[in-house]
Image (cartoon, rainbow over all chains, first blue to last red; front, side, top):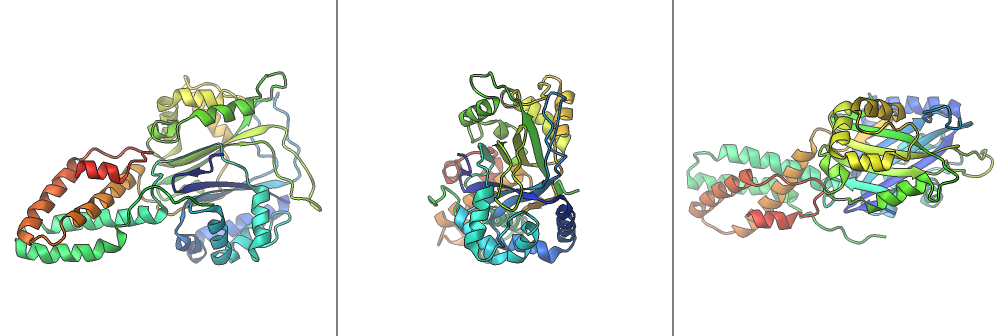
Length: 198
Length: 207
């Protein structure tokens, strides 16, 4: 199993939906894309690098030759792929606690979805639909989403400070340096090996 | 387009895997066995395709049955799922994949139906596009920075923390030249490599 690499966890789930329900879900995603406050829940969680939902209609599984048997499916399928930090349990707990409204509206169209609250049946539903990852790569395995965002803030602050200090007398430099430290002090957490999770 | 968030492209590919009942090792198992041998760090295929933030490969054996009253059904082919999050546009990325990781790409996709090889790059791109499925909703938390910008920012963050720690309490007459020297070293430092598990150790070596 390769679901974990450094501080990132790769989750894949698949769930069946009656074809007429996928139109409703597509509409929901359309609204979510254009009505920002709904999407802000994912930003608030701040431990998801990338996530996606993909609806594959029952007749849209790629068929590349006449020799490939033709699938004969009754359901459309909802795939979910996520790259998150932390453990599986932390992720599902946080999802259920913070994003229950959005999650219910995404998965309520899937067969046998129990609702995201209470969390126990929701976890059983996810476990049932989860597919293991066979290979997982990340370009920055030792960094969490928060590390990445903090690092970009430090980079920007350092650039500003370096431009500002050119030709500055030492007395003024001390004050400017202090202001720089105050600005970046919350963003200097160290990256490295992830703690062992469950 | 739902495949993109800012400057990041979310690629989802479903490649049908060959079915050979007479093979000693089934094609889907052969893919899985090969994937287990690939390095997951910068020496792996995606470390060389340096615009890749994160990527995964998954063999989907079948769809999932959740129980009554839903109907039980099965796929007639297994699918190799390739999910990637990268900078820029699709065609340049697939070209880079074919050029920089041709051996690995061939060893993986040779078990898939309709795979034309990587020698003819246009045919390879056309094949991958036939296998692509549209992402319905895509989320990227940081969607305006490239892999290289992120790696550099992480290096800078670590270096700044080390500099501050080492120069605590110094008078400004010493601090300013030290900072100028620090900036000069940081600007000349080699660019961090994707997939590297060296973080702070590399920064300490530089500074």
